[in-house]
Length: 400
Image (cartoon, rainbow, N blue to C red; front, side, top):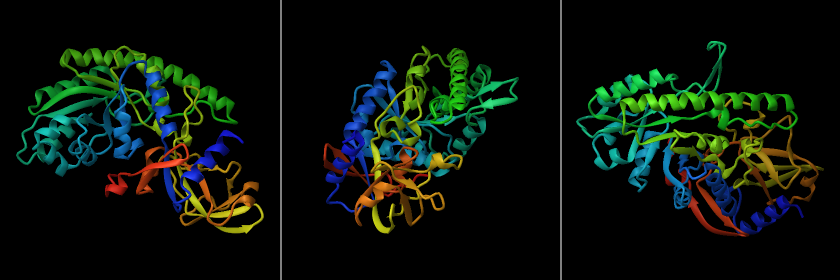
């Protein structure tokens, strides 16, 4: 029996009393992935990206491990909810225009102390001030550095279009703008190198592309390390008491942690290890989050149909954004249909061994987006469901 076949047997036994569709997290794999991230971080603390987890119980589980500290959130509403739930160090990783929540933040000392917001434009400061509704609490501010690699005089750009702040001078000027404005305090810098941390560099069947990605990432790491250090020096001239410098991502933990100026790593997808992280040379994780769909039809030899399953991930549309049939091994989509909203036909010889009601296990393309489809996660240890916990959706929250 292969390791994957053994996992399937465990998951089927653990969930035999549960009807699919359902989602699980394998706690042994989850914990092993967390330990591997800590090893790669080399002693620097890891701030957990909540968008990659979207389950309070699992955020609490990983934050109970020595070496993990703080949450990196994705909306202001989520940030305030987490702070009210007892998370006392929440970094909002994206700028917000949520005026109602800014009014809450600036009127509540506990929230203002727990939540740090992201800024990269003076207009964002004005929006916050206009939202205060009498609230006078000082807003903790983090400045985001654009990490993109710019080549040939800026004519070629590699990396996500995020912050407009690219140079040390631009980030320092933004720090001065915050310092001149009452009611705000710069406490941190964030720089997410998605073109290094979030792009696989060993794509099966694409050796030339994979080599090109590795060369690009090596150059990007060198350029960013020099520029990030210069940015930190420039900002510390304005804000000597800077509390943190956040960088990284699941695919670049060890590289970012090696930079002296970085004080903490941001990562989260490496806890679940979705399918997009199968093509990395920098680390190998264990798939921890899966979902199961029930077999509801047997249309013919070598074919079964499962209920639902059309859960594409965000990003540029393509087959790499689709969930992948995982267990039993050997199933594939019908190229004429793919994963459907209500039903998904699957092809392959393993289909002939599946009965009506059996479970087919899938891996989502990205991490936390799976939790937008399910109210609960069944936590599996060995061949037992030890606990069932709500996702954000199960607690009544769809933040984005």
